[in-house]
Image 1: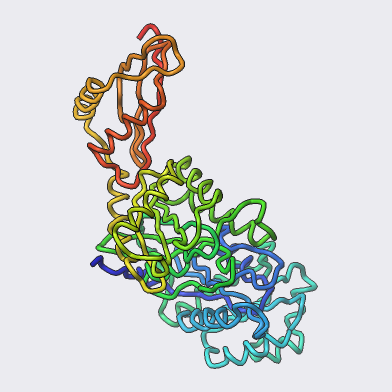
Image 2: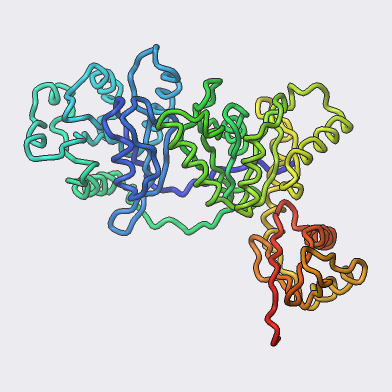
Length: 456
């Protein structure tokens, strides 16, 4: 059985942002970390699962946590889960930034939140966001604000950056008092693994199983996950950064700014990842959207592991049925014929930990560099067995050289004689022989054709 993942604790002090909906926490989060990581919109409840990033000030680092906006209303979808996520963030934090909207004034939710934060008074920094000009900054003395019991808030503007430096100075001093000074975090170079798929295939449940903690909200509501959430773990001494992403569906069906932003961030995560777990629902037919997504992964030369989730609900669990299912999947995804397939159930944790050794092997073989003399001998042998097939040209092609020009992903250059062309089937033949000899497990192989000039 594979070793379970251990979440990496970088021992950085934790600062959490809490507040009701629409006070600008995500904008403040992005401003402090100096990246557009969190999705920002005017739609209440944009943030659901906690967003975590490393922030730097005075050359030192701390962990910053953005939380979902609170309404304390049972009518709001996932409000119970958002409250649980916020309470967990408050419990784990060394400092809590209680954020209000100076322009909107104090609403009933602030009084409820103030009550809940009262017992943690010593670690609270009271912040009035959206203080975009001098007149608004003077509103911090309003009676309703002072009634919350945390004194005068520090007026800041996440939108234009006003007083953000002052806020971070206060954070720094408060951390020093509790002997949790920000520190230089160790540089860790993990394998980056993105979980990708359509909505409701079980990506978030699988993500929680892989990292060994209920880190992200899981629900039957489509598009519960709106923005990427990453967690760094160690498996058999290998750092792995798992990224949960928003479900991707057909462009024609994508609606609303939140889904558009979420899908955009999912595509961004694919491009940044080393390995992609393409998650499919065992109970659903493969669609054209799945096939387009598979094509996108191949175009972006990503190592891929196909995860058939919800296998606990499959018709049967025999070797013959699994093999039959594999044949159907490879027939639907001809561009991903290099990707291993694993059958899992995030609900029961069936075979989830089998994914770890597959990731490690896929990562290692993606780095493969074949010694030049070994590659030359290999190519000489396979071309003797099967001469190059002619493409559209009238002359029979002559291959003048074959070299590896890159790894991660593995990339080769085949040099051919001028005014000739090689049939695509022959390129596929070479790729298959490369896999037979050198494996390249889970990785796409790129073969570039170059016509040499006449004088060479």
